[in-house]
Image (cartoon, rainbow, N blue to C red):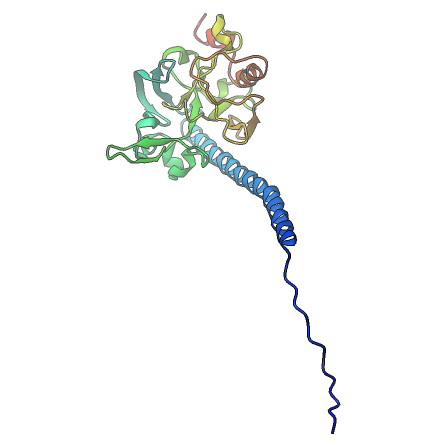
Length: 279
């Protein structure tokens, strides 16, 4: 007897043509081109957030020191004088400091652990920006990541050289006010050596008022991170990149000079510094 089941017609298979395959590949390439920059930017933003968190924790340790020492600012007297090429000329260390040593030659965290802030936060990781590419050469020919990326303003309890007019106690700070006074600065990897961040004030009575003394980092999507004496942290978006600058370079107008002026607004004026020195 005939079957009541109907037989289906055979299905004809059809492969991609070369043109169709090329179109699919092109679409994938376009999508990858759109997504990869976004992923890279997200990764950089995560590193920026991590760096800001590090500065926040260092600032908290700074506050804890203040509370234990009758508002005395942590000492900041480990200074390495260098020439225009960044080569060391003279190292000066007076007593203890928040972090001694030359970070370009520190293969271990010993100097961090010898700093006066370490007792308040024993994580050595908070001293290093996750985006910092700087490395230290070892005697066996290999390299290791640098242990520190941040410096402390030379105008806060640094009693070495021109820092003799620096603030010594928290209650003395009034120019600028604590909400605008820089403390820790994310320093450019080509500049960092000692643990102080120096700038000439905008009213410094010489041509050096438009020179960079130390150079902030620009590794956070052309931005650098700072902490302030009132406890908050910020990312400064630079108008000009900071790559290729050397210690003592003139800030190029108008964009780089505008960045310098923005930083100068976070340190005391020369008039205030001289008044503190008794002039």
